[in-house]
Length: 126
Image (cartoon, rainbow, N blue to C red; front, side, top):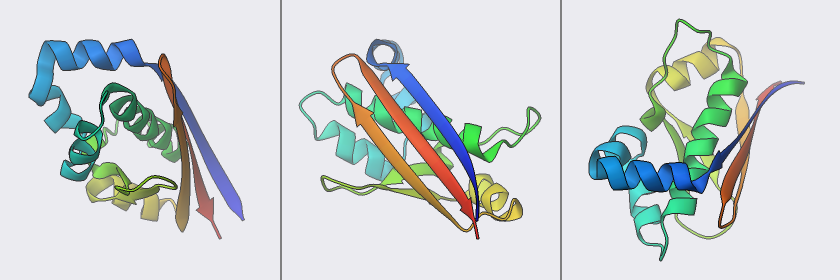
């Protein structure tokens, strides 16, 4: 079994500033409807949006698509509305790249606190 790893950390204040400056434009460009629904239901949605942003960045690092390929962040979704383990859901070019590179499944782990959010993505080839 081979794996690829991606890791990302983001300061929550960067997401807070993007939300203040760009509002719905920012959210709708980067996040799925399910992600928006989940994060918006929280008292402070910023750490939740930040963790999902970090997850998308970690996937992009793990997939190593190359500098000439741009992936749509909405196609990289952290799915699951309930507390606990989330799963990576891919569509479009992100799904195509995942399959083209021979990956069979993915694991993701996120964490967030008041100041930072982080994510690790593991992609497996069996």
